[in-house]
Each structure stands twice: as structure tokens, then as C-alpha cells.
Length: 614
Image (cartoon, rainbow, N blue to C red; front, side, top):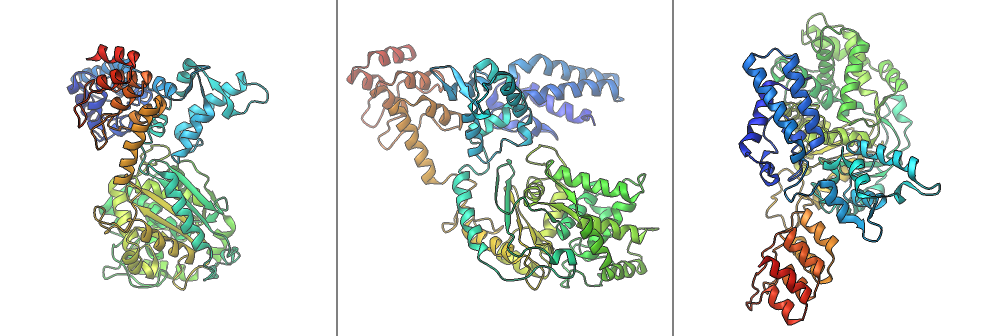
């Protein structure tokens, strides 16, 4: 549970090489070291609270791990350095605390307080929910403050706090708050994106083809009109529509996760001694093996039974009980889902076991060819397989599980590293080639994304490094895939360039929500210049926090400083010069400077500010 000495030294040596703490330099450290992501998550914010925890881990490591005396000395040096520099790191490159910057951005100048409700609106506009686990401490403190200090009829959103209170409330969660304020998320214009998703969802609602699975009696009772969709991005942006609160059993969508668990615990070589990597070209429940007497891949029933067998016999062999192995699988699922609701449907489990003659036949066929590990309990293996399929989720939980795969094994809502990147790579590769039963080839051709379907009507669609879409609609087509789910995936890649082989640079007909278009960048320049004309310092603050170049000019070479000076906007001029550090004497296409503009229109106060910086 402690960081290794090697990781400690790699991280700290890089920091020490900086000589001085400069937030711009820390940008380059985002991917240095195995655990650097913990506190280098954003472009220019250092997650100092976790650094404090990390520094204590360094100290415990030096006390409890068996290091040489030289190694202990170096680890203690790391600890001392981190402890002595925490206060420096708490402050950004302009010398202002992160909390102070956010407070000043949204404070009411009349009361010198900030509205918690306004901050919630800013956060939720990006798609990050106030229930996000990363905001847990912030929400607890705000709720407690509301209980102690609010008026009887005042809601949580109406709470107003001063700067010192705000700093205390936000100290544990400044990184995600700063990320939301700066809109530094994978899909910047999330509201427009969700409106486009809403159109696709509503279009698919009218598709009434197919019927629920009938070979498992409990599944046949699902209402065919049920239809749900949830999205979770790698930055934890969330969006849902439809019957998202209705739980359903995960069925075959458990197969990628049990396979990932085997890879994570046992490694690629061990797992693929027992499971192949090829599409079978057969039905998902057909009784057959490959030429080496192994299941063709882990997305078929035979392969998923083998995954259950490996978990039962090889993963944590000291725990041999079936109950312990089920708890192990359930714990993995909960960690992948970031603590979202996950349950178990016992009636579906019993129903599956009672109608599992073909699965039992497949298992004994595999046993005859010695495909399983030695001395494996076949009945226990099948029970574990049925239990994994009977785990109950909703689309909200399933979307976070898939987003953990899209994020390289790191849960986007908790930041926990659940799976190794190599395991995720192998899982997504086989989801791409084998995840949609006998439709896998066509799905890869038309949609071009890793996916897995289940006979309960769920589809897990993963867009690597971006997001997951979880879909659920019980009516299935003849192959066993959700009719509405497949249509949604097809329409999604028609609108967006998510297909793995879409050309991101030259695709004019499709949208790309991941990056700002040239038009949007032009609009950013326009709003920046209008903010300067109007003297809207809050808007200028927002542009600055989002990393906009404050020296940007229009076609005539006129910058925000030119326009603010011409309009006599003293506070805007002061902000641009003192906070943004823009040049005080840029020239437009006619050779005019901001000083000349202020003088021409008689703004003496602006001239005085400019003269201090010339």
C-alpha cells in the first residue's frame, strides 16, 4: 500500500530539477512517474492536499519498508522537501491562491461574498455533477456550514460565504473545482454535445423492432418500451436520458470485466495459456474450441466460463471459497464504477442456473479436453459465471465502468487506478473484434469502436481516451444485440468522428466535440474583445483561467488592451496589465498604442495606469 522507493525518487528528482516551483514548468510533469497523475492532473494546478497525503506516505515508507541506510536518507529528504514546499506549491504562478482566484472571479462586489449556488451552476455546466466523488469533502463541508449558519428558509444554493470560509470549504477539492471553472475538460462545449446526443436518443426511441430474450424467463418479462442511455467522459462529465434508474442484469457485459480482472491479477501470458484471442465465427453459446483446445476468446460463453475458472482457481489462491471469489468480482465492479449502485439479482441467477444445460455441456466438453486449470470445481466455476452475469447495474453505473476502460484503467470519478493499462488495451482489442456476437465484424466496420452487448439489452460502447456510452433497451435482434442500442451507435458515428479510422484533421462532414473548431476559437477572440470593451472583468478572468492568449488581436491588430483603454475601462486595463502581464505598448495596424487611445478619448485615469507599466 505504500509507494515504491523507485517511484518516490523518480517524482522528486524531476521536481528538484526545477530548482524553483513554477506552475508553468509543472505542466510538463503530468505523465512523469507511475503516480504523478495524482497531483499533476491539470495544466497549471498542483493538487496540494493529495501532496500532503503523499508526503506522509513517503515518510511511512522510509519507516516501514526495508531500505538501505542510503535509501532511507534519500526518502526522508523527499519527505522533508515536500513538507517544506507545500505552502509554496499551494499558490499559483501569479502569487494568488487558487481558492482566492476562484472567489474573486465570482464574488459579489457589494457583499464581498460568493454564492455557492452560482458555483454549482458553473460546475454542472461542464457536465461534472455536484454528487461527483471528487467533490465529496466540499459538499460535506458546505452542507455542514448550511446547517450551522443558514437561515431557516435558505436553501443550499442560496448560501453566501466570505473568502476565508470559501477557502476552508474548498481546500480539499480545489483541483476539480479549478478544472470546472476553467472548463478544462475533454468535451469543452458539453451542453451543445448533449443536445446533439438528445436528438439521436429521441430518434432511436421510435424503433420498436425486436423482442426481449426469451430463453431466460426473468429477462422475457422486461417491458419492451424501456430505453436508457448514460454517458461518462474520462474527465467525469455525465449525461443521462430515459429509464436510467431501472436496474438490469449485466449479463455478457460482465465478460470484458472478468477478463480484465484475470489480466490484471495474473498477466497476459498466464491468461492466454487458457483463452484464445480470435473471433470464432460461431454463435456465442456454441460448443466448440479452437485448434489448441482453448475457448476462442473471452467474449464467448466458453471464454467467460474460463475467466471464472481462472478467478476461482488461480486469482488469490489462498481464498478458495466461492463466496470470497464472488466478493472479489463484486469489489472490482464497484471500484470500476466509482462507487455507483451495483447489486445482485438472485432470481435471474437461479433462472440462469436452471436453464443452463448448454453451458453445463460446454463446461464438461472443455473439461474433457483438459482446457481448465487442474482440479477445478466445474459446478463452482459455472456458479461464479452465472453470478457475474447476474450482477445488477443501471446505465449510470455501467457508463462509469466503461469510462474507466476508456481512461486506461483509472476511474474518472474517483481517480483510483483499478486496472493496468496493458490489461485495458487487451480488453478493448477483443471487444473491438469479438464483442457484438456474430455482428462483431459488421459493427467494427460500421461503428469502428470497442463494444460489448448482453442479452438483457445492454450495450457498452467505449470511445478510448474520450468516454463511454452505456445503452439499455430489452428488445433484441436475431443475433442477440439491442435493436435501439445498435441504431444509437450507428447514428453516433454518423454525426461524430468517433470511428477509429475517421480522419480527425480532414473530416469536414462530422463533428468533433473534443476540440474547439476554428469558428469557436474566433468566437473566443470576439468575446474576449467585447469583454474588454464592456469592462467585464469577470469575463476577462474566465478567459485568462481557460488559457486564452490575452494578447490576441483582431484583423486590425487591436488587442483587448487597446479597446479597454479606448473605452476608459480602468479595472479591465489594470487586470490585463497586472494579472495577465500583457505588453503595455502594442501597436495596431495604424501604429497606435493603448496610451494613444486613452489620450485621444480623454481617459486620464487609464493613462495613469498605463504610465506605471511603460
